[in-house]
Image 1 (cartoon, rainbow, N blue to C red):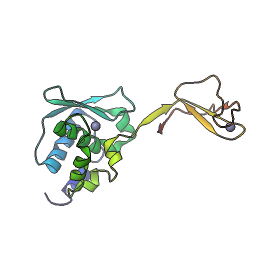
Image 2: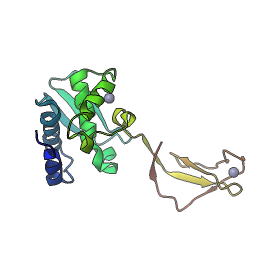
Image 3: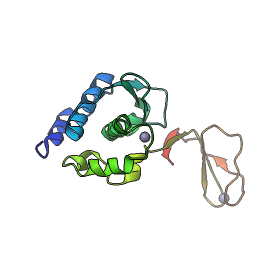
Image 4: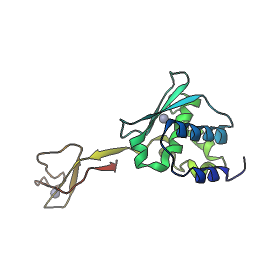
Length: 176
Ligand SMILES: [Zn+2]
Ligand SMILES: [Zn+2]
């Protein structure tokens, strides 16, 4: 294919609607650009998982890619690399044994730099995130602690002083 075609397609797509149909279209485009063939799969959009970007079930016919919307709402630029990762599982099986070679192979393609991260770890693992609902600050050293659940008290991890809740803290996603 000619260099830059994917860029034009991506430019035209812009922000996608996060539906099974749209994602299937994007995944089929990725297949034809990167693999020169369309793999057999179906895509299901899931909503309940928050810290996972996607999963693949290779035991269905065809294989099922679950794309989790809450994650991609936070990282709207990541849906293509997520799809390439999951398509990799359809090509190579459930483990990451051959993924380093897969990533290198993808990266050699003309269009790769627009989609494929230049760090292998970013390709291998989705960003891990947690939602924190409670924040406490240490009055003595200024250290902050974040909690997934609301706490009754908190002691500073550094100096063991009693911390003070930040009453204005809004639940937030923090990359870990
Ligand atoms: Zn994987
Ligand atoms: Zn402290």
